[in-house]
Length: 103
Image 1 (tube, one colour):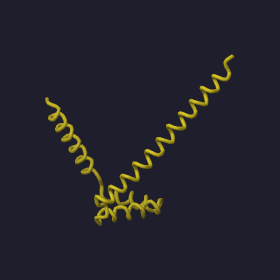
Image 2: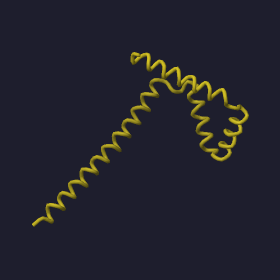
Image 3: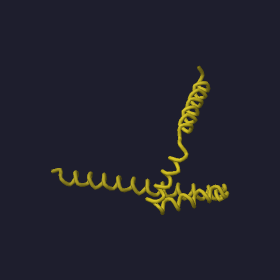
Image 4: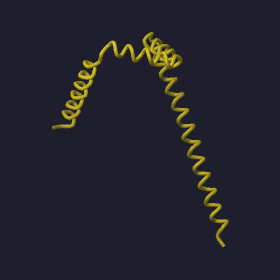
């Protein structure tokens, strides 16, 4: 089998599993679970409903996606850089401590 055939087979198997799982769902049970979750976590439910409405309303345009991606990337790079600098400074402090303790 070629790599493409293997991927197609895996994709078909995953689709069949998903279809099987969706076929076994009981609409009443799903409704009860969602209602219980909304009662226990009203703020999360409202935020999810607002986000879903935003997405379905066409609010996620390429321009908005670009800005969100830029914001996420900036945040990730900032935290990663801060962590790297902190690790570097800790290692420098340890090596300075080892140098000062040797006779």
